[in-house]
Image 1 (cartoon, rainbow, N blue to C red):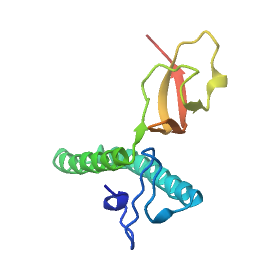
Image 2 (image 1 turned 180 degrees about the vertical axis):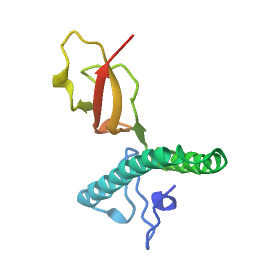
Image 3 (image 1 turned 45 degrees about the vertical axis):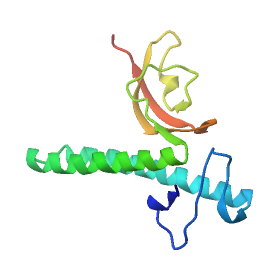
Image 4 (image 1 turned 135 degrees about the horizontal axis):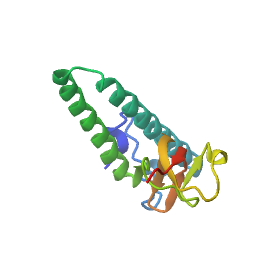
Length: 147
């Protein structure tokens, strides 16, 4: 299936990431990388938009909140389904224990001691994973684990 159902364009461009790295019309490797990068950037912007929208919805009264929360759920599901078609996944590790080996850059790691038990307090950018591994590392803010 084409990515065109998520991001419609004037022409129908089929892009398959990770699945034999094939493009229709014999596109060059450079064109492939440009399209993949554009898709990753759209996924990141969609993730950011969903987080802002979720905060805005939380401030609505109960009746409107349910309606808009449902629309947000539909939006995020469609993004996830479209990314899955090209074998990409957004990984949000907010609330998880921090491990120095995770695919995310902690901006405030210098604020803690080596012996501190840390948790990912918030994600500033999610991790983007592909079939063959890491596509784009995330960015996180840490906090001490109070447990």
